[in-house]
Length: 238
Image 1 (spheres, rainbow, N blue to C red):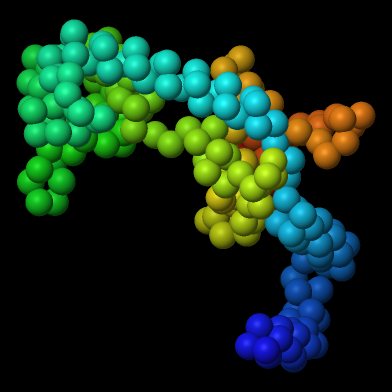
Image 2 (cartoon, one colour; image 1 turned 90 degrees about the horizontal axis):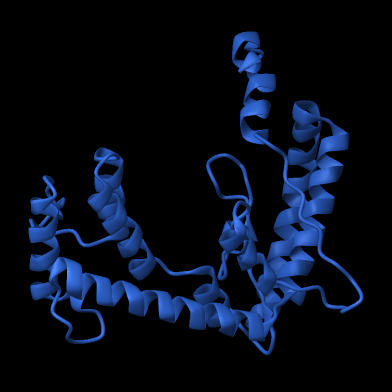
């Protein structure tokens, strides 16, 4: 009953807002664009409600591959950095942090610290070191390995959101650029360049085995739209 009252309230609110918002939107962007956006919204709501099929075997294969990669990184941290091989995540223990700090100092850098003054052991912290010292091969290698350990992979996201071979992502246009954001799982973060990144897309499959999924991307669309919208001819030449 509570949910029904919420739905009624939502319909009534939409009915009240529509006569005011629609004319203003028509004036701002035109009917063709609005009709297109409404159709996109309808299709996206179906994706949220009906879900997306996934290949559970492929998801597990990628999880197993990730486990092996992380095991290899752990061995490297023990043998090269001096992290003590103890516990599930020894690089997060005090001894592990001290070993990482010592290794980074030996490479001529300093690990950033948190607001409380503690060593920051995060993928962003190591990424900032790699960006700050791009010619330091040791730091760049360390940053790459720590990212593999600390970042939640697409396979982990899909596995966590899996419901009997389907995922039901939340889709909204809440990014600053106006682009769609897909969460739980983040299907739109799958890679598009390189063999390893493209393999992430193999986790998503069509409902019908006789069908195929097609990926389409507009090259540099954000910059192109900005150039067109601003009217800056010099920027458009770039």
